[in-house]
Image (tube, rainbow, N blue to C red; front, side, top):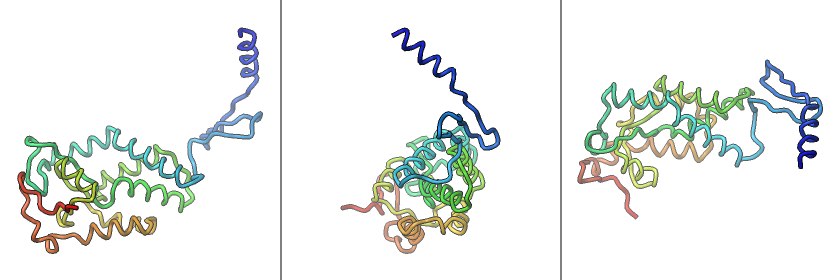
Length: 214
């Protein structure tokens, strides 16, 4: 066993690892493969979705995202559910990405980079996503956690008038990167307004109209 380890160590010592500093790429003349910090595309859809999910996790886990969320609730005082008018000291209030969802936003940023033939890393995609938040160029709303869950399960409608942020910027600048499913999702959310769900507009902590039942 010792002899084998010694042989492996000697072999590793002979491997010369180089890097292209400008391209941020590692390589060795002894191997046909290199490792780049950035990519330009994906091998398949599965890899693409996994990449988006990883960026989502990175964004949500960042200090900058938490500061953005806390600024809305703690500094600007958006501490009330827009539907039930329950406050943060009564229950959990969450910031819901409405137009677009965080997944669609990150997906669009990646496709934009691919379309513009730009190389990118998860760090750069996540940074661009955070910057869009700080530019207030997305649509979001404050709702209690239970209704947030109901929305994502398909059992709640939110009037477009209640959405904060400049979501039109996203629609105008990223719509061409959306597929039919994404466009349908956004169009359905835009169509829901106070007028066409007027009979469901009386929300309270004990009454949640607008919740679709199966």
